[in-house]
Image 1: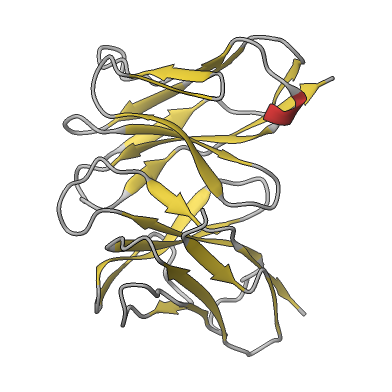
Image 2: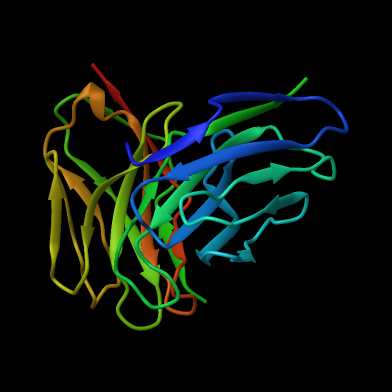
Length: 116
Length: 113
């Protein structure tokens, strides 16, 4: 989706290093999400945010952290506590906040993270 | 809890064959339903959607009908092309958590020339 920018496209992490993946959107959507996708697998939810300054853990939050200081931005930090970070990371947005919505999610092009 | 189940892949077909990828859901209330497509190395793209019972979503020759009585949303295409080779995900809005969408595990489709 043109309205969601993930950067960088490829990222390499050294042992013991924290890295931050960027996700920026200009769709004016309230909700933002981070997913992890392993090769040949489906999506697993890491964190999501329904509104600025608030976020919730998803199914696999351990070893990750997020912030939501601006509506447009939802960066994901992969910490050194995440022992197996190699994966494809997808950011998504949705025109839904804390109320029920029938709107779909929109996805960025992803960041591929590898261990050096 | 809410869940989406779709047929396991990989599915391999010859060009111009008829495609069906099954999807069923378990959800409270009346979820909206979606099909997404993922090409290699890319994010997910919304393929089609349906927001109420008996709605038919359609796009690029793909169709899916929201069947409340069978809680299904099967994806169909009458004549597939090599360019349709991708991973397809079925998804439903979650009722218990307003912002979450529940995804199926994905079905890899390969089309032989």
